[in-house]
Length: 565
Image (cartoon, rainbow, N blue to C red; front, side, top):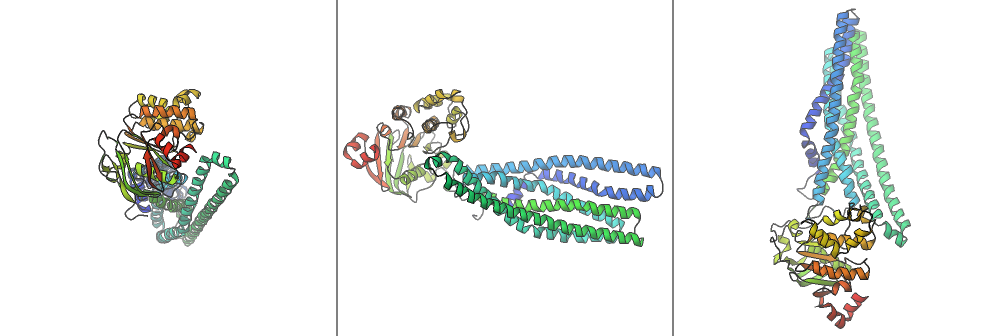
């Protein structure tokens, strides 16, 4: 974890501090509830000594009324406290999910590095819930400790030896409970890591199901997931055994402690040091103490699991950013002139390239890695290892990433659709009402897709748009990119799954809708390249040729092979 980032302890403290008032209110109510519970056996013992033993009806009625009030108060406090504590946990988990979402969506990137989407989802759900539970159980722990203190004071009033036995015995029991929870904490962290990894693998398999079936690779995929799932199951079973051992050990210690209280109380009663009513009260308090001790056992286990989950959340929140923030903001009406000056990154080797404002440029490369690295540079998902990318003469490294992406939109080939209506997907990038949406639908031929759906553009799409064909998904994704109407638009193979007739129609409309706007097409489609102003050929990570599409077709055999293959 990077130095200076949030730690697991800090995440826990933030979760609790954010709900401080609710925790305090729930703790006070819980203490009142436990205090009344502890006083019940004391009042019953007093009833035996002052009413039953003396035959006083007046004393009996008075003490029965006290018992009724105690039960009324403790039941009311319990219900109110339970409602507040459950809400506290949910609110704390909700705040953590918001923090995680903000970090994952940070324009500077980095949170998703080496993490599968399913793993991030598991952290934002299961781990956030467990840390939220810590805010819930704090009030339970405070209430349990209050119950032990009240019981000790009550026993001191009955007998000093009994009270001292409780006061001196509680700290070692709490310390032992904390020590016993250490293995549970370690195994809970491993359990969550394995479960998150299994969730990530499952999400990947589901998203690539069609591809796997087409390749006949279902058996290999199932075997891979079975291994991952078995690892997750083994970790979960180890954590379950650890929790069972933790709870069993603590309950055994508690049982011995309570038995010792009962034995000492019985001995004192036989000696005449305490009355029968005092003995009943002492035994009742000893039995009552089982509840607070069980509650502390539960609190200890939740804290152990919460600490493990807090560390996993802290790792995401403290993930180093991929690109520096930058402080400059592009001009309000950016011209959109892009320039790559000696850019080196991955497969790119000193690329020098001018993309004039308002131009429609095609970029052809046979190397998928070079195409991807070029897109990454233009989107500023990573900064070049060497050289610089400039927008209107300003290096991208000096620009705020969020502000930059309001000017430059890079639409990747594998862009996913949302589980929403077709129109909602297209509107996701639009900023100026319905006009740009209608233009984008027509230019991308996505209006034809809408006409074929049962409810037109209001038809709800399945997850990632799987209810559409590949070509239909591409057209809707292209419409979304066009609807954003950015000064600079970079498209990567936007029509690979579209038939040739529709592709030609899209190419012509694309040139019209992007007139006077900088547009870059990273593609080998002859239909799209035919409408560009200029085509640049990348080979071995550097610019090899440039010219008009028809000129390159006639004069460059390698270009002809790449485009017409």
